[in-house]
Image (cartoon, one colour):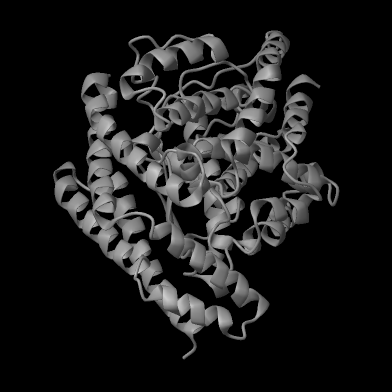
Length: 494
């Protein structure tokens, strides 16, 4: 057995442990009874330590040295590079810190479920302070090893190669034109008459509609399922993808669009190359690219007028309201492209959504760098919400700084991926339109060429290319945020 083959076998062991952790995490969020959290958290922490010990094994240094001297194929060279990068990143953190982060994150997330409902910032902040303390320790360790700033060192986990400098430039540009665009769109939409569908929309009927739409979007139910959780997410592994949503019987579109969003994540996972399964090279390139797929499905594809021509009859049949004007294609299009500043990020329209991301990015960047503390978050959140969206969250922690799950487990550096994903998605669509008439394909109920393009240019590439090179190969250029601005102007002002 060659040293490269030994490394592959070792990596497959790590993948199996990650598989178990993913399914345990899904169950913890969707099925587990409340009383099981402490024991589950301890079990997952033990699993995290086992994974960490294997991932940081000292003998791997010798294996990598020998493998690099072996005669390898082009694909194996790329795979070896990704395995070594993963090993180097894992080796930065001591096992006791990994265990503390797992336990502290589980405790914070579990308590958040009730604390958010109770608007209990005081209790939540105590747990969050511990999470932030450990995240700062991780950031410092990674910064010292990479020469990056503390926040950039965390950002690099989710979006390799991206920096605060580039994000500041991108987001400053967005802030220069976004407020005016929001105002223009709202003025234009004031003249539009939109009907609000009147509930109730029974949960079971919503679920049936969601499953039907997932089928049309190509979700493989032999390797995945749909469930319910407090916060919608896509988890599991490529061969067993778990997506969740939350239902509101007064508004079926919220859950449905959430399902479509998570289906985009799932299709990416299910489309990753089987021959590299269990290896870092076979994983998603970055969280920004992952978000580009969910936002391509939800925003670029499913909020388009042609898609609502497809969706409207399905909704009318699901809820047995074939004569309901509120469920017509035209009205659903207007309804789901309404622009209105709101408190909740996951319910935001695609024009105001970047403001939510930029707000979180600016707070978490300064939090990790030590410029602010957890106690400063509510005031800063309120100030930025007023500045960017004209809304106050003073004393409203439930709809303000406690609404998201990401900070509870220390996922700092993740939020920029959402708006980067929207930019990538717009750029992919612009390139796709040069090769095919996307609107006519949707009208003709023929979505497969669209999926084939994504499979060829994104899904099957996995982590064989850098994000920059993936974009260049697929679209002919590096990230160009002008495609995102053009998309918003074309959809909402013309």
